[in-house]
Length: 155
Image 1 (tube, rainbow, N blue to C red):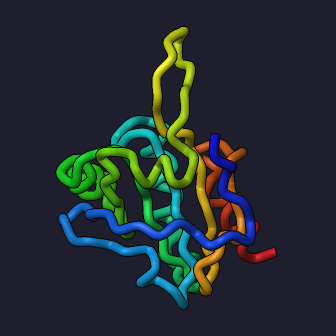
Image 2: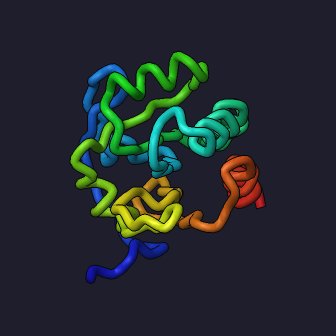
């Protein structure tokens, strides 16, 4: 088992398609902070609540030079529907083969209602301007996620 992603290490680079099927490469965002947030599935209650909080915090995040990128195993089409329905103002990336989720160690065995399945463990990574992991957010409620992130950024 590989070690988890740790603060200080270089964020694993990747290129994924966004909701418009445009390629987004993490290393091309150097010079900005990136909030990379992994979530299980578009348009589910918890993921919707989390996305809405980030949407409503966009002005504050912009003022702190933070780019928000959401990653899930959904298809670009599902991401487009999610963005349109929730009026999201940031990009969502499709990790259909969950290769990036695996790079970030968020693709794990999960238990839900007595069943075990592989899936995304809701986790966010704050990546600094130089491309290193600055903080890992893994203990939060979906409705408070944006507040936890902003509190960390403004402390």
